[in-house]
Amino acid sequence: MDIDLSAFHFLRPWWLLAIPVAALLWWARRGEQSASGRNLGISAALLPFLMVRTPGSRGPRPVDVLALLLALGALAAAGPTWQRAEPAFLDNVAPLIVAVDLSPSMDGADVPPSRLEAAKRALRDLTAQRAGAKTGLIAYAGSSHLVLPPTDDANLLDLFGQALSTDLTGRAGRDVAGVIALAARVLAAERAGGTLLLLTDGADPGQMDRVRERAQAARDLQILVMAVGQSGSTPAGIDAAMMRDLADAAGAPLGSLTGSAG
View 1 (cartoon, helix red, strand yellow):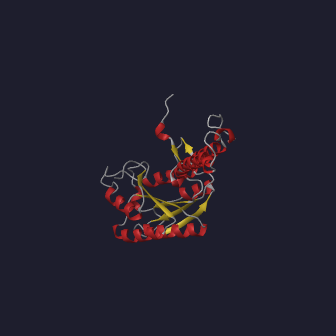
View 2 (spheres, rainbow, N blue to C red):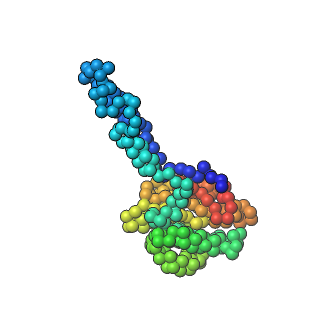
View 3 (spheres, rainbow, N blue to C red):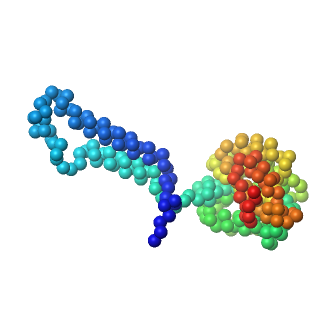
């Protein structure tokens, strides 16, 4: 059976720093014990007979046991594991806000049956993977709207998610800056940091400065951008450069549901 050593890692590697500290304490203590007899002025010839443990005696000393326990404790606290941690937005502790773009272009069919339907599937899959965790829903185009505050009711979230349509918002545009501000307020009401996931196929180039300002102000909010659609595969394909600009302004990683966005 092959063992993938590349998967082995520590969850809290900073605890490993305690191991050399334990070794240093062990070395210092052993040195003190060996010098204690000489400091008392006892003859070297008599010293072995007066010590409780002679240099040739077997078995660990208390300082040996203590150092070993400290080293093993540090190793255990470091959290060795073979399993990679899930992405932050799959964390069952942190709330997740999913913002779905309802611009008319989300009806594009380069992702069958449509980009919007692909976004809905992503919402459903994320909810299933985060069973028991709180997930909220925002819909946006030229303005942003809270559809559902964070909830752990997967059925309710799916009900609202499947009802999303591009004709629900009459105002053209992509108010990502407003989405970030709204998500930050929602999470502040939850008294918890969390993640905002943007499911979109474009961005407003005139909003980049505002997006950057809002993202920097929302310190407890991690932002992720997911491009929905094929990059340049059709005349109506997503603008990969624009998506990169959006991710850069938001300080966010950029991913894609249906291929590379960059």
